[in-house]
Length: 325
Image (tube, rainbow, N blue to C red; front, side, top):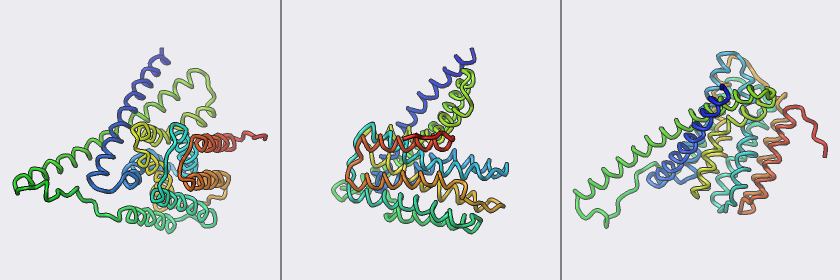
């Protein structure tokens, strides 16, 4: 009976998650048009931060409990999941044409997402490092926002008189705030339904006698990437590929700068990343592979398969499974 109840919760949550993802994508695309920011900028500035709210919640919970290492591992492991699994799945669903301008922006994000873990391997992570990471996040936001956010101006042909111009501007303003409200509600739906999906799936697995290690390696680890994955798939299905990549790759940079920066700045202890060097190796492998794929001008399905293989190798290595080639 318990399994049936959790299965119903799971199916309802998945339906809400799918619908909420559509709202998020549609609102984000319309906002990118009105503000003239572009899909990649909206993907990084809005979606990547919002979809990392679960990680920020975990970070503060870890600070309260004194288990800061959980957050550090979650940040590094989350980067592998985002690049290798989420981008992998998106590429498997469809090939993505990459222009030089888009490639440059995404490559910059990948470079920072690779450089930061490498540098952190050789320093003691403390409040000063946390502050530097937070300033890096703010700096990249400024870099992304080269254009000031403005509502689309009405051309002279569109405003033959003052009254019509004011009406048109009012309609545009109402649409702007309506889109923001829809985006907030959609993101709330994604985050809440994602939590219910992970929770119900975990309970079903326990009822079926599946080992907790297997649950941790699959359901829980995937749960953190579920917002990015669903928004990414929804974006691809609707043809907004740059929005998906801006969200996913931007999410990696957000984890390393905003989330990790907050943890280090607020943590009373000094942390080292030496024990996580195997994880960082997978971060670098995944990032370098994606960087090379971006350079080809098109992300193809076999690129997605290769990235997925990297993810499963990461899972096997993390949980002590020996890989024999």
